[in-house]
Length: 457
View 1 (cartoon, rainbow, N blue to C red):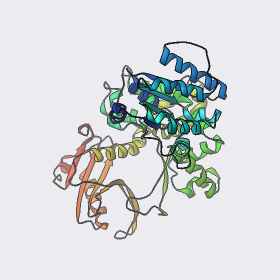
View 2 (view 1 turned 180 degrees about the vertical axis):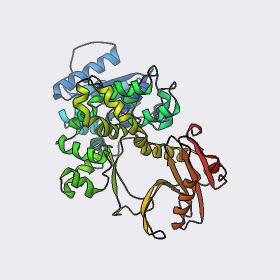
View 3 (view 1 turned 180 degrees about the horizontal axis):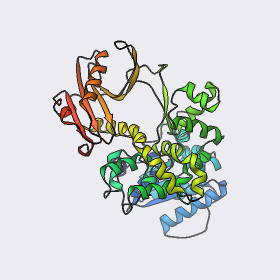
View 4 (view 1 turned 60 degrees about the vertical axis):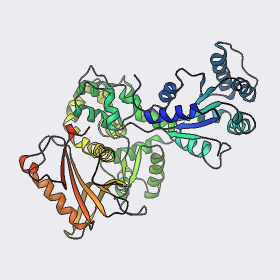
């Protein structure tokens, strides 16, 4: 069953309905579901679907030729066109009489084997294809390549595309659709440890309980997720050992640059270089307190990918035990730490909820805050603050993923912290995994809103 991507499919189908040339770039991280989106889009449509491979130009040309014959003439012909220009000419002739979608998946692999392909496409688009009813899709997992060498202003294809889709991981609400039989809390945990990536969500079974699902997928040496982060780093980066050390440091709570540098033994400048590469891949994010300038020295680095954060915190250090078939014992040992792991995940879920909910005012930004409280003269943190565009109104949020009800003291603490901010209007939202004490419920008002996790979605 195909889940999610309604907006993306709507966009593609609206452009397909146009009786004109269309050229889309679809890109995003590996395992996020780009190919499944395209396959869903081309159902019932005349389409050539070709996947570039890490091989020679000749091998890719043969594959492209086969895809053309199969789509246009229902033929398994082994005939290979003399070159890509001839292959595109064949498509052009067909497109003059019938609408057709041409998909080149993993376009960066094709471009690596044949660096002139983008220039050739540019010439064909400008001189012939733009006057046909053809829909071209170039898809790639290398986001830097797609952004710079396909959509970037220095690319031969710059200015030719009619649309682009950056395919992102699913949010909690959509991720939960993959496993309707699980409880809300189990859905949240699965979302947290898969990062909302379509490929990983599909690995979890509705017929297994949470513990069995996690043990099977992460703590068995035969399963995909056992070595997934290492394999992804080897595909995307050189020197995976250095990246391992940086990610491990961040996964274990070392978020400031100086701490990452100390833990890894790398110079700060070197750390920044590697961290920027991880940011580009969507594995790490640089975060600053909300309302701070981008140049703030308070920046921290956190793992933006839930699967990487879980794997490096709980799997990486236990690889030997798992290979000795002691995965069930390893999971039993780390299970009590899941609640702490879920704290950051719950903040993310609450942030998603804020963007989707009807709030007292329209918000322009939501994020964490940390820094010095000049009134209390000490460092403090606030889970989330949502602000409007003129920064006159704000919602202060506390997010607690705990097994007990939230006490009234948490409400008092957040209101106290908010005193350091001079917003004209202040609201307070409290999110709790397990509800609220009676004393907390008595504090609820138009300005103090209590939200139980089970009621959020």
